[in-house]
Image 1 (tube, rainbow, N blue to C red):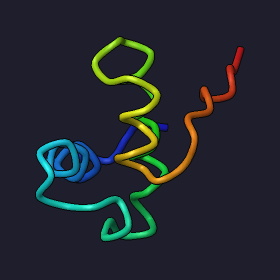
Image 2: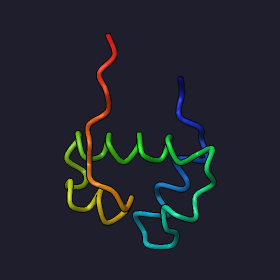
Image 3: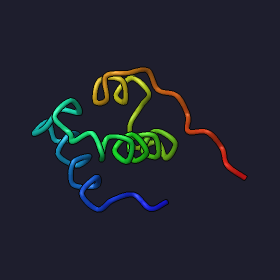
Length: 65
């Protein structure tokens, strides 16, 4: 399943400090989490930053094969 385009916008706003994760619409929250997890995996943000942005402990996404 592809990440919704609006999720990218929300995630950029969260990283800039212009929006909080709590203000993200419920149907988009999982996509924003996916983008945040990808940034941790790619070394763009730390697990601690993930927790600050998302408000929950970092857990890697389940692997699908």
